[in-house]
Length: 289
Image (cartoon, rainbow, N blue to C red; front, side, top):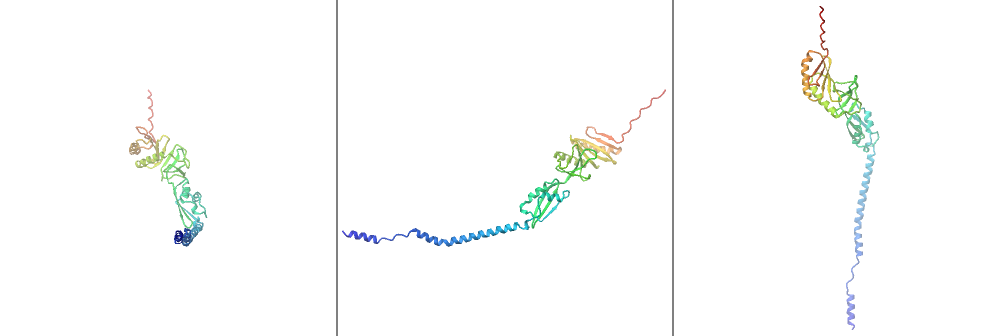
């Protein structure tokens, strides 16, 4: 009866030892990986330090006199004064350039009455170049009255400024309305006058003093013949080429023989008004018997 018990004890003593707990293996892995984590931490801290130095350097550079306004040069202005441009641009000495975009400064300068466009460039250290493109007049416009005041008008119909006198460089146009600086004439009016004046000056060889257009669209002009003024009324611009041919025929016939004061082409038959019309014959006296 004792043999089974002895066999049971032999089995228990000869059994394999239990495996080591996993906690000890995990501790071994942590001990091996700790130098790698320390190296990664040192690299990341060094990277952050370099980025911090770079940002500090950027702040020092951008806040230095290199990016501060020191000199402003204005070019391209003729009728617009330099003081107007400097006031409109909004830049002041010592102001940082990166606070104002060049496009924003150019937009401020372009808001001036006689300025059509503007280009702004920053050149380090602290230099600003402002190139102004002014509006160019294409007409001289005045109200249709004696001793008129003439104004310069650009191709878009904007009244730019008052002129001291008149010039032969641009066509003169009188209108039946008051003209003021800053006023914008109707674009159709400018386009019509531009087309008509081009045809008239191409077909009519004499010098034209001024054009006149009323509110109904009737066009007329004043020229000279033998140093005397001649008023030509064309009416509407319908059949303008035909009217100019009739006018040329009258110039070669009537105006070569007599002094003409005016020609009216508004009707189917032209009307010629002479400067010195012939006197009507005096009535014959009755015979006395």
